Length: 340
Image (cartoon, rainbow, N blue to C red):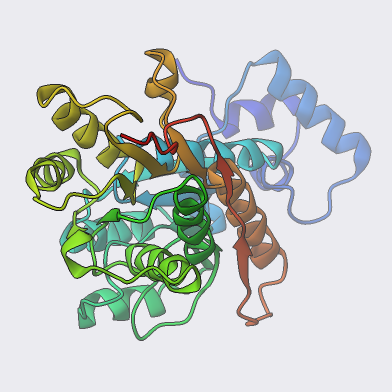
């Protein structure tokens, strides 16, 4: 039989209200009385219900985390960073995956609101260019801190932590140029997202600074998934004046490129050079040395969680804070230019 507050009160010889004050750390209780209650809790092996506690305090010791692609290692690393800081502050996490679907995201937001969470860390879907009045109204009327992680919401202004995608794409393209490439293609991400737009800007900026004409035929639009990257790579390999290198705007899309390379018996970097954005650990496991832009993924999660905790501690402050983290580049040889 489950131990109740009544059982603890009886064991300690105090009222239910006193036990409740000790459990919720609210109101004054004599130290001697508190010790009696704590002793009774220990002896009866009582575990307080988080749900019951939330009903009495109107909140839980829980935060919500919403990501668009839980199967993407990029978001796995972000979640890891969030968890590290959450654990340090004894906070629990409810994780929601939206599959890049705004309706699923809206459903997740409503679910989290029902759970009486303290705050939300969210990487929004491509809401920057899509407008949904119900979605925006739900976010703005939440009444708890919301922290964005590497994603933007159109017509809204929230605190958040972001990656300098322009810098990352610039440095990736520059590395290919410095290796000797002049014909460089790009496979972009989904173009209704800010990171994809910024990465294309960075790519074009590098070409412009190094006086290389921008060839629109070398710009292929992907969607962060490997299928479209595979199709784009197939097209690239069939071009009459094909590029000698490809800048790939996400880690998952690299897999699509590699699949196409293998089918066409293309060797990296002898036949085609390549650089990706964000690391993909599986490539290291199978021994493929692919150069990549190293986004600070774990630090994104850690910083976002720290910002949320700061917001919880300073509830009266409405200051919007935006932190930008810088990526770096890891060159492993796949960017080299092999003269034919």
